Image 1 (cartoon, rainbow, N blue to C red):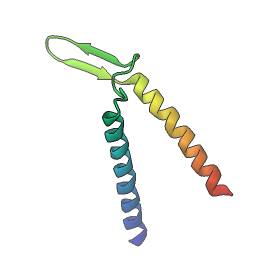
Image 2: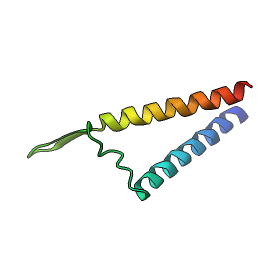
Image 3: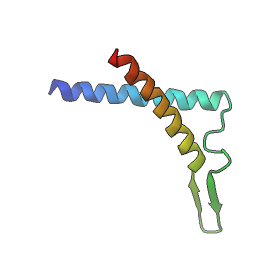
Length: 75
């Protein structure tokens, strides 16, 4: 049961860091969610939004970050 609690705390810390990153991105004017390549279709009855370019950018940044972390932990 202790390992489950540790995983929950780790998940909470990760969510906290992601939330802080999103907050800082909004504070500094980084247009995540409004990049060229994000798909937005608005009609009379509703709207559809898919942040394609933002998702790709975040994926690239997380890949670089996790690779750096894994390299430092292997040494």
